[in-house]
Length: 251
Length: 202
Image 1 (cartoon, each protein chain N blue to C red):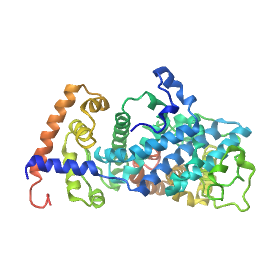
Image 2: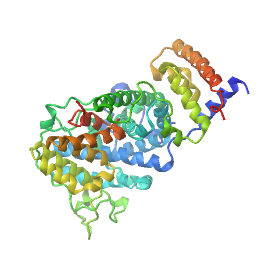
Image 3: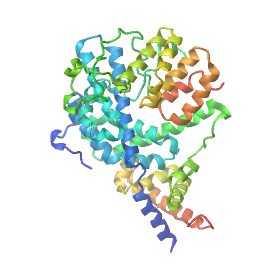
Image 4: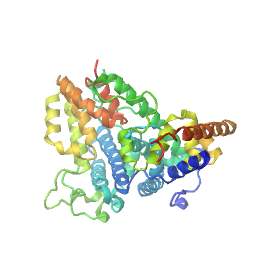
């Protein structure tokens, strides 16, 4: 076999390469949609007043993003997620960014490299929106056809576990508010009270938030330990800029 | 490659594209995102890997690319070659990721796993993922090519874009793209030749 033939063989192998199997493909699709949705929720909570329309929209987005949470099922439940898009367009410039910028942090945290913190310029304390806390999440029995902003009055008989993207995003928002208000201990309590968020699509957001909270509490050793792990796993995330600029970095 | 419902979006001029975000329906936009993701996610994943991003950062990097895509969907109507448009985004994100990874490494000091200063070869993790030894060899060779040559080679030889498309994706003039391709092919073949030492070529 000549060198040219060997080179051609390698090129042919490269052309046929499949990097992502079906499950990984759908997990990534779900996480993109979840992150976009979380950004939309956080943007809405930062900029909207407690208007009914805003609340119902976020409620719908929460449910829609819940569809994205279902991983491999996402392909069949996308109609449920379609309402994401309208809100995500509203928050267009913030998709892919996060809530972690707080007033307290902004003074010492440099601008992240790839995307600015989403809420940094927003009022740190906004009235808590009347987000549809009774609406069923995706884990309920709702069918895709039922997903609409008007569904918010349809309370499920039994509230499902707090695993929807909306609930997770709201937790992160509340933790942010606590941190912005100077209540780092309260923020930590909120985060640690729902450790399951760390296992969901917004897990990196949860972990990064906790690192910043630990910094604020002066628990530097813990922050550094967690920060090193975080940056190793999520060094490409915009969150990494904030974590690396926090006390978690080594001096 | 074409979007699934082009009829829903008549051709737009540049000015119209700028405001098209306001006119897209949520349904149309989600549908478009999903079609686009389904069509191109493998391409992006391959590109990320070939652009030297460590295996453990592949998923996050892919998500960053598609979050940008998600925001820029309205621009797509004015894009002539989706794949070159997408590759430019991927290339920029990958460059950021590499810079960030190196920066975090410096900030974190020596306590964590070391990162290469330049493009990594197939690390252990990648080698574990890639069961095909020849694919590992391909990555090893790609990692030794200069960035500018490798980009042209990957897009033209592996992703089979035409040279005008490659030139557009990389912002090169045609002559430069052709000359880099020639140099890349020669370098690739030299590496193939050198790989024929015992144990490196099954």
